[in-house]
Length: 106
Image (cartoon, rainbow, N blue to C red):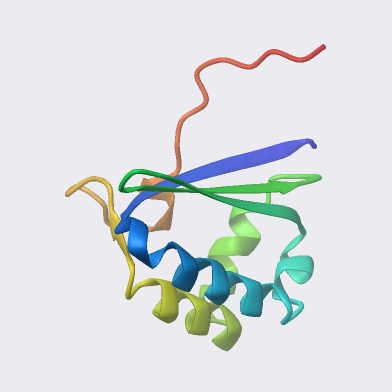
C-alpha cells in the first residue's frame, strides 16, 4: 500500500455494530472504488473508534471532493449518529486524521 490514513474519533462501544453496518452498506455503493480506496478497516478500543483507509495513492483530495456526493452524505449522516470528534478543536474531516510518527517496513 502506498497510502494509509487513520482517523480517530470517539464511539460508545455498544454502537460498533451500527457503524460497521453503515460502512458495509456504503462500501457496496461503488463510491469507495471511485475515490480510489482499496481497503477499509474499522477498529474499536474502549471508547475510541479508528478508521484505517488504504489506497495506491493519496486519496484525501478525492475524499474531500466526495463530501457532496449523496452516497457520502448518507453514510456520514448515519455514522454521525454514533461518532463524535476526539478533540473539541475538531472542525473538519482532516482534523480526525492521526499523524504518522514512525514507519518500519521489511
